[in-house]
Amino acid sequence: MITVNGIHYEIPEELHAKKLSDWLREDLMLTGTKVGCDIGVCGSCTVLINDEAKRSCKLKLNDVDNSNITTIEGICAPDGGLHPLQQAFMDAGAIQCGFCTPGMVLSALALLLKNHRPTRGEIRLALKGNLCRCTGYQQIIDAVELAAGIMYPNK
Ligand code: FES
Ligand code: FES
Image (cartoon, rainbow, N blue to C red):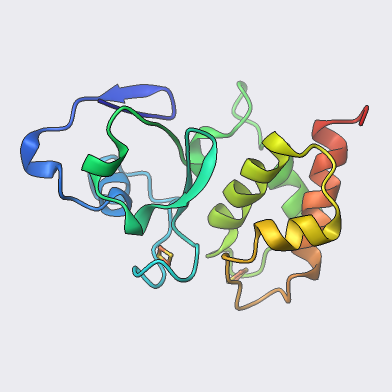
């Protein structure tokens, strides 16, 4: 069984070798998970697996049996509003074409769940596997700092 955004799925045997990224996009229609390189290089397919950032194009469904997966569709507020990281990316001007953004946000979320007040160096390190062709990265670092202050204001 695999849990995605709180919903449980039994995986039939014939799908065990299917890529997680393809299953999310083609079978669950969770197309917020982007596939750029499809070979584990760009980070655009990043999802959270048990709160760790992982590249879904490098995993088969068999690899994630009994895992709890969060995609970009699963992080919104209970009322459907944007997650503070999503809002911060908008406010900091950290989005241009947006293709890298779901992966960036989920890598940043994995960091902030563990480290509530990361330094800019720690943010860079956590996002080093997520490539962006548009923004030049500074605004992305700004956005993660901004979100940390909103998510954990008393740190
Ligand atoms: S699509 Fe998975 S790392 Fe590029
Ligand atoms: S905003 Fe275009 S790739 Fe990052």
